Figure 1 (cartoon, rainbow, N blue to C red):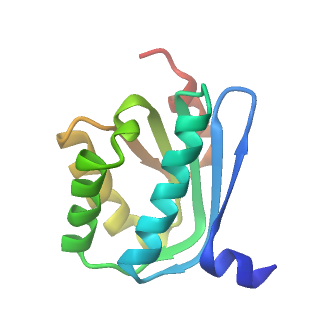
Figure 2 (figure 1 turned 60 degrees about the vertical axis):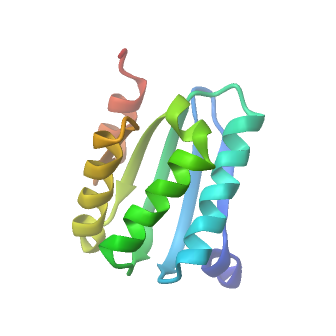
Figure 3 (figure 1 turned 90 degrees about the vertical axis):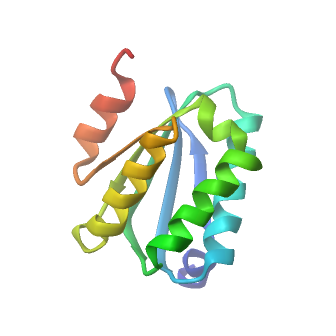
Length: 129
């Protein structure tokens, strides 16, 4: 089971949102992109417009320029991310890259916010726009 989490993510459809659970280190752009594509496919297959990303057990070790490159892929190829509201629960070790990611996403028109508390993330996610 631990090998599963090193390579992949778990996506489930909850009552009000899609829930994504990730665990392990993310150091390679290709793997992060693969996981983003899996989430994008799940969004396309679902009628849910809310996504809860549980990254508390995930550590991202990527340079900022690769985060920006991923955002460009969202804009050009994974366009369904523009249609959903995403709340990411992160661990304190990834706060710097998480804050950077959330900032550039919002500047480019994505509805994305980071949290360290699951309750806060769910409240924000389920709040009326």
